[in-house]
Length: 246
Ligand code: NDP
Image (cartoon, rainbow, N blue to C red):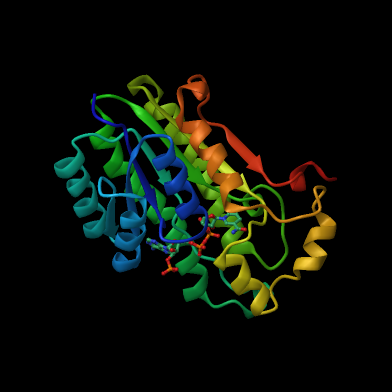
């Protein structure tokens, strides 16, 4: 039997890279897609010769179509898709925010998730499968100075529910993970530009620490596994208790 195939976007770093490793360890053949083709190829080589690294900007339709065509050609199937590629942006008062930056954040998360899901669905038609989109606690609760990111991540939660209903009959489950603060380059950048204060965050998180990329990856893998066979349209917080804290 051929190995199941998982596609992870934004796989060169952070949560995406941890997720790619988790799928590989679970016996999947992994397609690692990232803006940086070289970095994606290097990560794929780290995992082993059967894995594939692809350069793909998820907001560019031609890139996404070509990537899924490559998956069809090289793997012939697609069992799991993780829409992880995303960006942060400096936390500014709304009155100081520029429209182009607002649009860039929405476009990356929403258009990227839409395009990859649409094209992946065509390849998954034959055997069904599972998708996991990456939302955020910022899309579920109100965080000041984060309106673009919050709106984008709330949009991803809404898209997840919509796709789950639309594709359930085709045997495709669609769920989202909503991470809290996770130790990655994205969060390091926000700490460096003064957007967040890590010590203050730790005091706000019931578990008293930020998450590790592997802790998000483990839940993504679970949602794509047969153990989650009756789970679709769920938005699962993985946040050390952030959303539970009133
Ligand atoms: P990282 O910045 O560590 O990794 C994101 C990866 O995605 C990078 O390799 C990045 O490339 C790539 N990427 C960015 N834009 C695109 C694009 N248009 N097409 C393809 N690849 C792209 O981020 P995280 O691992 O922290 O975040 C992963 C996801 O998790 C994001 O959706 C983020 O919003 C979400 N998230 C993260 C949280 C956190 O605390 N870290 C909390 C909640 C949600 P490059 O480096 O070249 O930009």
